[in-house]
Image: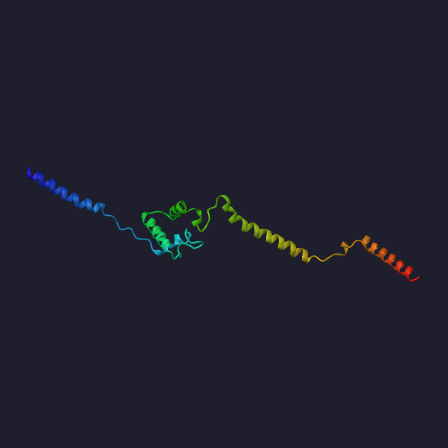
Length: 161
């Protein structure tokens, strides 16, 4: 019986040693500042106006960059981290607004304005190149001018007399 207890004890010791090895985790590499800043560049500081998170000097932004680092360590992707910030602070933290709703105006309006400007410029340049043709002046307007001239001359003659 003692031998059985010894074998059980020895088995438990071996099991405990292998269990420790089995539970040991490989160390998770901490994300570099470049990796954190790559995501932080795509986010704006919710406190400061129009300041990207990667260059904002406030303590809050330092904490948010550390939060990004922590989320990367936890295994979240870039999109999941951006979704986390949008969930907590709204769409205004995104450097690039999402393409939905009225935000489409931001993407479409510059293209439309550019096309209108090109069309107007082309039309103005074409109108400047065309010479004024003689056919525009009609013969009837020339005759009217001659008739008026004759009347004026007759009126002047009558005044002289």
